[in-house]
Amino acid sequence: MTHYSRIAAVLLCLSLTVRARTNDTVEIKSNGRPVCEYRQTPNPNKVYVSKLYSPEGTQVLLDSPADHVHHHALMYGLDVDQVSFWVDGEKQGTQNPRSPAALSGKTLEHTIDWVSPAGQVLLTESRCVSASDSASPTLLTWRSRLRPAQGRGRVRLFTSKAYAGLGFRFPKSMDGKATFAFPDGKDTTPVRNTEKVTCDRWCACTGPVDGKTVTVAMFSHPRTCRHPTYWFTMSDSLTYMTATLNLYRQPMVLREGQALELVYGVAVWDGQVSAETVEAAYGKWVGRTPGPASPDDWSATHINVARQECGTTATASSAYGEGYEADKAIDGKWAVRETDKWNSKLNITPHYLKLDLGRVRTIDRIRIVHEGLLPGGEPCTTSDFRLQGSLRQWGPFHDLTPPVRGNTDAISEHIFEPAEARYVRLLIETGEQNDRNEYGRIFEMQVYSPKENVK
Image (cartoon, rainbow, N blue to C red; front, side, top):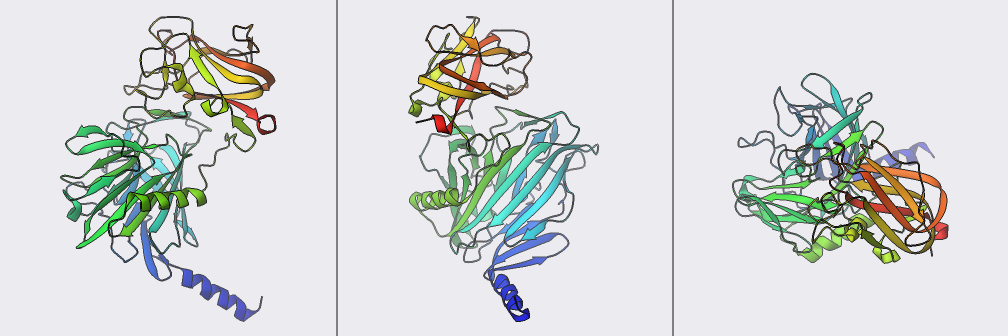
């Protein structure tokens, strides 16, 4: 490449993306149009997207208003091991960047330590905020990969309220005037006054800003944790929208070596747009946005055959009642403990969950999503169990793995030598970590077969 062609390439790049940096903020522009501004130093406890613009230039975020000074525009926060990273203050946690944000094109990457007031690093976040070159809508992708700090055996993620997660504070002109929309018009769960929680794949808010109408939508990637997302919304005294993990009802434990990756999208239009328009944008975003990357993702080589569409059915030793039947463990959902799990009756033992795969299959790995922690912190993850296979409905059953004893993992993964089985049984010997066996509780049981063996 000649000297002049290199200059031309540089100028072409600058025409697509212009970046300006101050000590505190990084600004991303596309084709000369501001897209967003990112606050890369704690203010005072968090780093976040401080400004976000519609295609016509309307700024749709409100940063640190007097009524809730800890509401920082578009921010991510929750509680870790009894330390709040949602509110601000000397006694609260701080998101402490290891270095300035790194920019490449329209993509910003930031490594952030979540530090307790005592100076302990509890959690490390690898954050990536990227802007699309779409003219309309303005489109951001927010990706956070959270993992326990080195040397910290485990961390507990939770929230005492319904609203923590990736939160979006709207300008005051929207208060009392904003309307929210969801793709499926699902029923919402009232929290307080106009505060609601709604489970769906996206949430959109429409209202006035600077005398103009804007629509802002947040997307949940189908492969992100606890999809579909639980959206917290409120619109009376203030207007707020959050993509939550439902941690106030279902806390989560991350062990050292594990990572939690979350992928969300944010889209902004000028004017009021229809649900069909938002859905179309969501579909395009999903199609071009990689899902969470995970070292334990088996989808490249295996298929989960424990699904109804694969012909699998489920039975169990008992069911707590209507809505807790065995087929809840193969429906692909594990966000809500009241609706998404198999739960046995009280003290009717032995508890078991049995899957009929529909035909004999070669299987070599199983993933189980257990109850985990209850909202009050009670450990109810399945403690002692066996994973067994058989060619016949009533056995004999043989162990696929060594018996599991003293399990504390909310999601347990089991890889074993390939075996042929039509029936797979989870035989629960101790259902709870308090050495009681009152209930069996399983959100999801996934059984994997190599792709070449699945027809």
